[in-house]
Amino acid sequence: MTSTYRYLPDTTEDQKEMLDFLNLSSVEELFEDLPPEIRLNKELNIPEALPESLLIKHMQKLSSQNKNASQLPVFLGAGTYDHYIPSVVNHMISRAEFYTAYTPYQPEISQGELQAIFEFQTMVCELTGMDVANSSMYDGFTALAEAASLSVSATKRSKVIVSKAVHPESRAILRTAANGPGYGVEEIGLNESITDVQQLQRQIDQDTAAVIVQYPNFFGSIEDLAELNRITKEQGALFIVSSNPLSLAVLQPPGKLGADIVVGDMQPLGIPMSFGGPHCGYFAVTKKFMRKVPGRIVGQTVDDAGKRGFVLTLQAREQHIRREKAASNICSNQALNALASAVCMTALGKNGICEMAQLNIEKADYMAKSLEKKGFIVTNGAPFFNEFVVELPRPVHEMNKALLEQGMIGGFDLGMDYGMNQHMLIAVTEQRTKEEIDQFIAVMEEIIND
Image 1: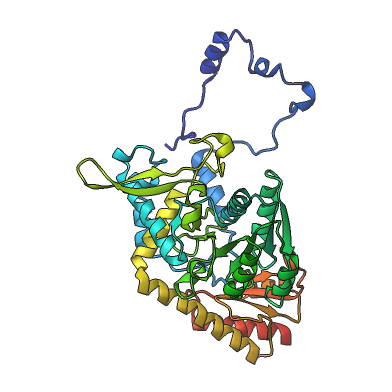
Image 2 (image 1 turned 180 degrees about the vertical axis):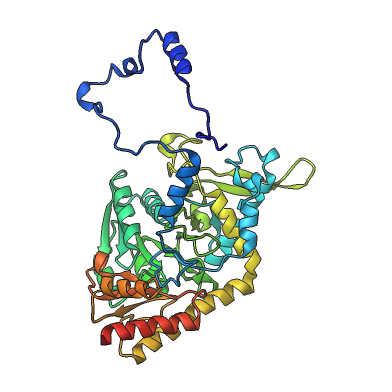
């Protein structure tokens, strides 16, 4: 017989025993100190409890209403992408020593976890062209906010400038994070699909701690980092670049183009979409800012016998140093997802990652040119990676509804964040086949001609 409860609840006798110990006659007496006006005086509006077997069936029925990448081809990106994940990734992260691991404070029993994180840091440095990377952040959005805070702390200046071509959610989190330290956030507009360089030149000044751009940016376009860096450094500000790590397998690394801090999200490399999370941020800097990096860093050393070993080091957080000296209050990371990315990159290898990135470029280029041949307008004014913007003759939500009815998940509606009504941001990864791309285009053509 299936048990009604997976875990044993408190029985009536258990509750009575605890109340007797506290010299109380009822559970209600536990809450007497709470003012009546803030107490809930009615039952919670939740369904009655179900036996486990019925609850599982109910939840499965609800989840089956979702449409996902294993059922339908996905042309939606905007920060979370459908990429190939080698099967070895899940096998490794499901091992108990990794799956249940906590922060490896005791190196003598955590060498496997520490080495895995060290390898992750090393590969992030290779991709970004930076000197030092930490063991990961919550996601790319919070990593960007931490980079801004570091720049304000390091330069003692009062504001940061961020391009509107940076992901809208990154900018929203940046504005929220700025409220604590009290620095200002100013935005730079767009010149077609890239940052407006002339506006940046007019707006940057001696109060600017950092300039923040995305590479490729939110529209998939590739920014001129060298020129943006030149303008930034002329005013003595730091140059922060948020970058898709997969794209760095084929693009010039930001570190080679003058970036002081490079952040981003590792989701494209080994982390499933999972309807939006969890992700894993990375954070890389030049050697100059090594001691201001938030979170934790795993370092390589030797033991008293000369054998290679790994330890946590340079933790610039309020838990480990004087609070007023802390560069961050980030007290955790995404070790399991960082491991997934490290395993993915190792399984693919340098040539595999390059090939995967190149396929993203070629397939997006094929789809964009095919759409243009059908009369659609691709509005990107610069080369793009695996996303581009298409102007449509109808509202995006109508197009996406029709696409879903034909078994495809459409792109992102830019009207929501940019006021670019009837503009769709389309993502084309290596997962999309020629047949799926051609079918998408055929459905789009049919809709507008209907």
